[in-house]
Length: 176
Image (cartoon, helix red, strand yellow):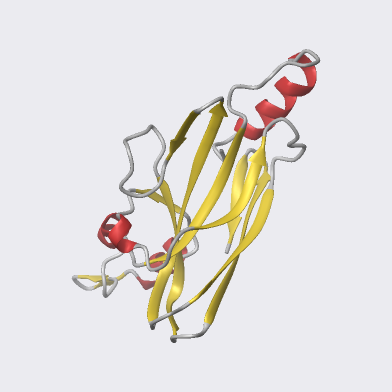
């Protein structure tokens, strides 16, 4: 849902072209997040330690840790069940930006290295699809939001995340 101008186009099309009583195909998307281990695809981008030969890549690594990464995430990388952090109802949506939060209370210690993000789409009627890890193949994947340092959560502690996708100058700026 946060691909370039997609929300802007949906809002504009609904406002200018949808007749009274008309329905959008693509009714809503539910946004999900889960704390995660680092996916294999991300580990290939940022090796540990960030040194190759006599070149120290730590400065470039810091930039990578502040950048969302589109990649396949395995369900085995998820450290807790998915939690919804938002819903985009296309029949009512009036902004291209979205913020939300989710929370988990750990039943055993966990070490979160990032956040896995995906969505489930309701196209109307009984037609739905999901981009969840290890789900059916779609043209959409998951998004990995790396943490600058691993976060250790003890049993009985709660982890709360706030996520934002703010549309600015034709791109989304993510915060987490």
